[in-house]
Length: 102
Ligand SMILES: [Ca+2]
View 1 (tube, protein in one colour):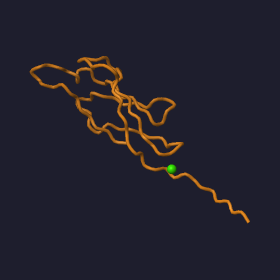
View 2: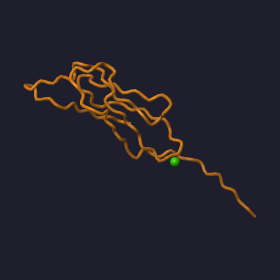
View 3: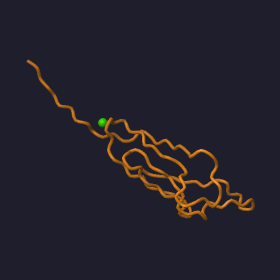
View 4: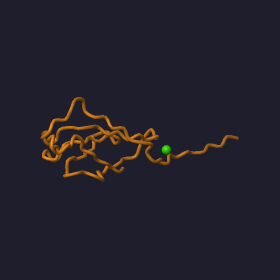
């Protein structure tokens, strides 16, 4: 006698996110829409569920995040507010930090 058991997938939580910065430096006052990085969600499933990504800390509205069409695991981080990327020696601001939530 043979018994067949159907195994259904259960979505697991993502195991992480990789952030690939665009090559080269980002100059101050970049163009709106300039791609800063590509975020890739690491999902253990062969057919992963869709995700949404939300910026939790976005100083001065510096960034926008958009899904890559046709790829449920990739998102583009781009410039949304050019003036948020101000570099002046007297400000001492050489990094813009952000955090995100899946
Ligand atoms: Ca699974």
